[in-house]
Image: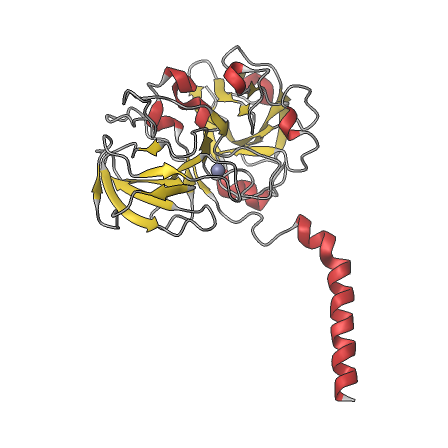
Length: 333
Ligand SMILES: [Zn+2]
């Protein structure tokens, strides 16, 4: 009898799991968990260096294959929590700032060798930069001080992931990711850092009411048809979600941008608001999963990035409660 009951319980559990499985895959536990911090530092006095140098020891800026906050068609973090740079197996990796190693994982059996360096860059808080999918240089340990001129690791060979450097700016316990572009605003080769994050350089002109932001994605893998093998691709559109004076959330799409992927629009005109109105907003970028050019993303089910970045795996629009948590605000002139 006891055994029979056990069997039946197990059977019901299995049936329930089968029935619930589609729901569980859509709403995994991590959906809407916090994953990002969007807190840009303006006019940083110390610019970061590249984590890679060429054979003459000169700064070299590798192609970015997957930006921080980029929706992608993979089973890893989505949107991507960090930036992938194409660097060959065995090449040396250098810290982008002098600093202290605060975390090191030397076990590379799963291609997850990992170093985090804490640096004081004369800003209000230290920055923590992580280097992942690497083999740490032998002898390095936590509390060691490292320098931009001396390698800390080499790129690991393919095991579970294509060989590359995953670099990110994280918080102290490595649970949240910051934007990176502000650390590289003088690097033309990376579009002043815009290659590293889906959204960069948001700007509201409070005289003209013009809002502008740069947004694009990069091809996830090598694609020889484009830009030296790696594409910079337009989004399908960006969506401005807004609430005027705390009224109902509304939105409009914008597909047009300039040659530098800069979207500009007049918020007063587009929202029909008046002088002194308070506009609360967030923006989504929708990556085109039917694009004939951005082909590595074909048929991907998850397509949105947010500004400000905050949630792991959010849907294309937020509930009022979720929106209230991340919304920024501006005052119409
Ligand atoms: Zn990555």
